[in-house]
Length: 139
Image (cartoon, rainbow, N blue to C red; front, side, top):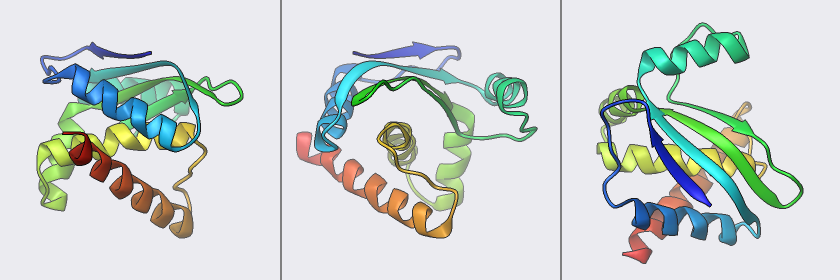
């Protein structure tokens, strides 16, 4: 079950479309869907989590806490809407495209993909592109 929670004024339009897409991403990676919570927040909210739980005194667009058990994906994915908006401008893409990238990114981490090395980051980006393309197919 995928749930969306809001700690800021942002609201995701048409949650059902996103839920269907995210479920399809999970299935496409031969994983089972458990309980996944997306929490949309602002920079301050996510910065506090970053400092408290990860000892990183930096801004970030996403932090995911992975509670996956075996093949069943479970976790909490915190998304800073402010960072997504800024990154969209920096990467010259729409807010919606950058949001999809971040939403997929969290799921892909749960599927075992990493992004710490250049090689891993390249694979992660390729997988993100593949999953974003699935969103358009579903429409």
